[in-house]
Image 1: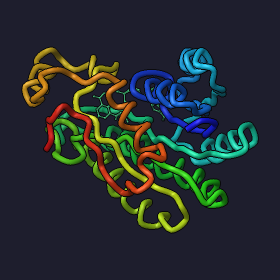
Image 2: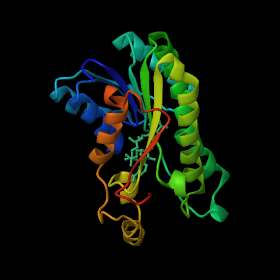
Image 3: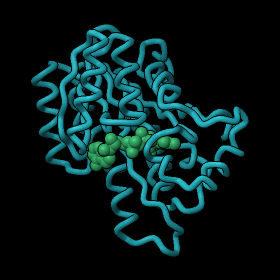
Amino acid sequence: MTHKIALVTGAARGIGQAIAVQLAADGADLALCDVQAEGLDVTAAQVRELGRRAETYAMNVADASAVDATVARVVADFGRIDILVNNAGINRDTLLIRMTENDWDQVLDVNLKGAFLVSKAVVKVMMKQRAGAIVNIASVVGLMGNAGQANYTAAKAGLIALTKTTAKELGSRGIRANAVAPGFIRTAMTDQLSEQAQQAMLRLVPLGRPGEPEDVARAVTFLASDNAAYVNGQVLTVCGGMVM
Ligand SMILES: NC(=O)c1ccc[n+]([C@@H]2O[C@H](COP(=O)([O-])OP(=O)(O)OC[C@H]3O[C@@H](n4cnc5c(N)ncnc54)[C@H](O)[C@@H]3O)[C@@H](O)[C@H]2O)c1
């Protein structure tokens, strides 16, 4: 993917950072977006060390006008967008009975509406190019449900449906959309789980270990690349066999 331009959301740390670095290792230049702008400098430095271009953009994916303005700046800076990775996500875990409307709205806003807003803005650019690849970062819990995550599982299931609809609407314009559904991956998001919850998750993983952000990143770069030119509307689980 030499000289392809990739926009990654939630690129300041964790899985988004690993995706950006793997895309750069494979030759792409990076537009790095995150609501936590400070962390983006670390990712940008790693991309530049690999000899690729990186620009950073503070952007809340749930803010429609900020998304439109940022995508316009990315196009002004790079001239095109070949790859979009909708990775930004949050969780606000609690049992349904205790979940507040605010817990629900925040998670749906970032994880689902955010992907819709960024996709809509970027797809306009990709349609003019008549080419593009979108990879949405869902989750295995969007396929199987998970106690304590009504908001998050609903958002991720919605993201999988958004992926398939995007693939159906835009395939004829040369734009592919696929999802990666990670399982239990070691990041700040899962570090906050209790030891007991982490062990319970691990018992479901036939490979017997948590995944690393790089495990997810390699699946994302495959789907974003021309090696996956005929892969469209699919969900690739990266979960050590947790779901099969
Ligand atoms: N870690 C896991 O086990 C796991 C499993 C399945 C899916 N996922 C998904 O992978 C993605 C990345 O997760 P992670 O584990 O790296 O989490 P993380 O919390 O380490 O990183 C998420 C990044 O998204 C950014 N972000 C949050 N809200 C944002 C917003 N409104 N606008 C822009 N950026 C925002 C954060 O600042 C952060 O840099 C998420 O979509 C998550 O749901 C993670």
